[in-house]
Amino acid sequence: MYPFSFSNIYIDIWPLRIPWRLTLPLSFFSSNFMSVYTISDIQVHDWEKYQEYVRRTRSIAEKYGGRYHIRGGEITVVAGDWKPNHLIVIEFPSMEVLGQFRTSPEYQSVAEIRKSASTLISSIVVEGYDGESDNIGT
Image (tube, rainbow, N blue to C red; front, side, top):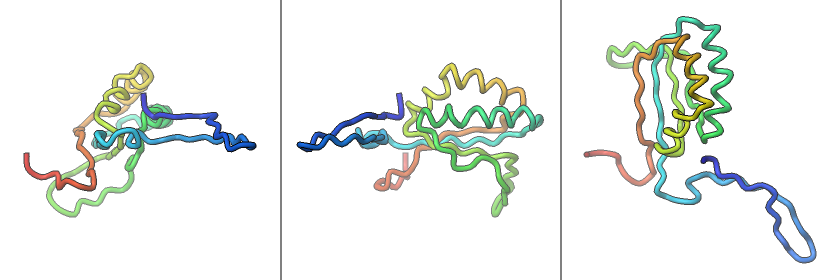
């Protein structure tokens, strides 16, 4: 399960023993992992309930390496006829880790709060940019 975390690591440099803590991102262990972003547009109809969901979800997402990039905020449409309501963008280390988060028992219980407080308009998952490929074509 992400994140990999090592604590209470000791480096023996004789005659000193130096304790330190090291937390490594999943990408350190393999270049086969590519971040994915879940992008959701929701319409909140019960803000009080939704605030409870927001309060409880962050720590669960972070446990799985999730990092919020957008969680609401003012939206300005600059092209087209898209009319988003409330956008949420969360980055996860990989599609596999995102799946673990979404199916985890702790998130499932909190997801019920979101479902009762809002309507999901649309949601997508997109691969992030790996810095090398152009992500074009099939």
